[in-house]
Each structure stands twice: as C-alpha cells, then as structure tokens.
Image 1 (tube, rainbow, N blue to C red):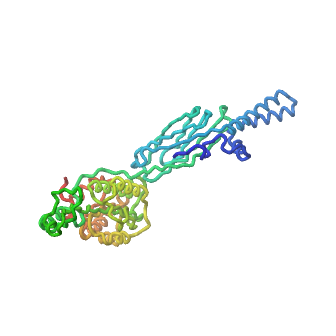
Image 2 (cartoon, rainbow, N blue to C red):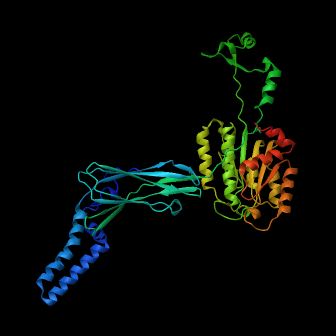
Length: 452
C-alpha cells in the first residue's frame, strides 16, 4: 500500500476538510469521553454559577467548557501530511504458517506530529487487530512497525485499510482517517514432499520408446534444415547436403514433455465435515502436493475439477513453455480459493478431457455412487495411467463405516483399468502414495516402475 502525500484523506488527518462546516462537525464528533465529560461539567458549572451567583464557579465552568473546544480547534487546524506503506513477507504462505506485515509511516510535512495510533484491519481468521502507538514523529521522520498474521484456513484475505488516529496531548479529541489501499495475503494449502517415483504417462514422441525408434530408423528419418550461422558443424547431414546442393544440418530432437492431469473432486455431496481436518481439505492439500511433485519431475501439469474448470485451460497451448515457478504459483493460488461445487457427477470433466486421452491422470475423489463411479471409470486415458485416491467421508466424519460400499467402488474402478486406493481418516499422503505403488496393477506397474 503506497499513498502519495496529498492524495488521501489520511495525509491530512488534522485538517483535510479545509475548516469548512463539515470538517468542524467531524472534529466535534471526535471528542473523546474525557472531552465530552469536561464539556458537560463546564456547562453544568456555568449554569449553577448563574443560578447561585457565584462568579468563581462561573470561571471554573468556562475553563472546563473551553478546554475541549480549544483542543478540537487546534487539532482540526493543525495540518499533517503523513504517507504510509505496507509490505507482506511473504505474500503467499501455506496454511498454518506465519507471514509478517511491515508498516511504514513517513511524516512528509514540516510540522512534527502529536501522538499517533495506527490500526490495521485484518480478517478475524488471521488474528487480533493490530494496534500501535507512535510518539511524536519529527518533520521528515519515519517510523516502522510490524506484526504477524497466521491462518489455518486457506484463502485470500484482504489487509487494510490502515487507520490513523491523531489525538491532542490532553486526550480531549481524537480524529481518525483511513488510507484507501489494500493488500492481499494468499494462504495456500499445505504440501508434503512425496517419495520420488518413475512416472511415465508420456505423450507419444517422448521417452525411451521414441528414442529407440529414432535409433533403429537411422539417419534417413532425420528431417534436416538449412545451415544457420553458429550451428555446430558436427551436426551437418552430408547426405541431405549432397541432395539439396546446400549445407544442411540435423534438427535437434524436441520431444514433448510428459503430461499429467490432477483431477480434484469438489462435489459437496462427496464430502462430510468441515475445517482444516476435513476430507475435502485433505484432498485439496493432496492435489497441491502431487501437482508440485510432478511439476518438479518435468511434467506438463494441469489441474482439473469435476466442473470441467482447468488450470491452465484445457485446449490452450501447451503449458510446457511456461516458467515452472509461475505455473506452481498459479496452481497454488487456484487451490487456495477452490470450494465445493453443486455438481453430482463428472460429465463436465469427461468433456474437458475428451481429445486428451494420453498421459497420467491422478484423481482425488470423495464418496462415489454407482453412477459417478462409472463416469470416473470412463475418464481413464486411452494411452496413459490413471490413479484414484478415494476418501471415504463416513470414515473421516466418524460415521457408520461403509467398507462394503467403498470396496465395491474401488473394485469398479480397478476393473476399468484404474489403480484405486482408499484413503483412511487422517492418512499420510506419502504413505498412501507408497500404498498405491504396492497395490498397483500391471498397467500401473508399467507406469510407475520401481521407486528410485
């Protein structure tokens, strides 16, 4: 938050209203309880002095009445120009971690300020509202303070506006002005490191099969191009050079990155319970962990929900050229605000995946009925691997167990070629990851291979 001097009401808390009637009324409304008590006592003493004919009491009453009014006038006519800035460190934090907010106040006027009180507005989930008292700030002076915020709930939380309260030395009057700028703290899901595995799910044109095909085919299958200044002469393709009559070089192999889609089931009917320890929050955290893990392994990743929404958008240009850090930030920001959907099935997700039937698909699923399980079964890539982590919400919500029903759904997915694993209440994602490897089917073994 940066507020240039002279462009915000808080820049002139003592006289931003220019002394007009509205400003005077605002100043009078800033009388504190002490100031109002002095004014009331002075008026009462003056009335009693008039009735009783006591001139000394009248002077006391006038003094009590005039003191808060003088404080109002002085505070209202004194002009201060104060600028403020706010800095978050960091701006994106995992749930349960702390961030520090740094506030800086600059007195850009030629007059020293009086006693200042700063108050920043923060959502209640981030902690108590921070308040700071600053002593006299000299002309051109600067004060810096900081406070910490923490949330166990993911989301995007606004910070601000920053309020500045100015009071007179006697505490008779207080004027409050607010800066207009806001900042946003993003609380992303917690992530866990996962054991490294050999994931495939590559698209055609990548991996050992592609390289072996090129090796067996020989140089005749190489597509040459015209020599360019700076090309390595060791890449000159002499057969093509003789054929075309100009210097030709072999193209460098540009294999496509393997693809992975992480499907997150957000249906509200699929999860029971709320809060940081709920099944849905475990699924969101698990999806974030898998996305980061696979992105680090060099995959081109997408996040897909049951509503058909994808990040990056399915059908867009391949995101393999995007910076991994930027893509990871985009995925985490999306998961920070993902919420339950009102859907009942996976028809939209099936439509979004149509035409991209290759690569690796990892799904985090809630409760499945027979129809939704059949829809999930059809999501399996034609030329890839599908892994389903199924959360039994009755187990997570301490309700009656439905082991038979969950086992039937897992069997239904396995028969369709999925590797399906049930996630117990409070299960560790690395442990579930290893369990999936231990229970993998033959197709899953071909995709995951041995642990590295």
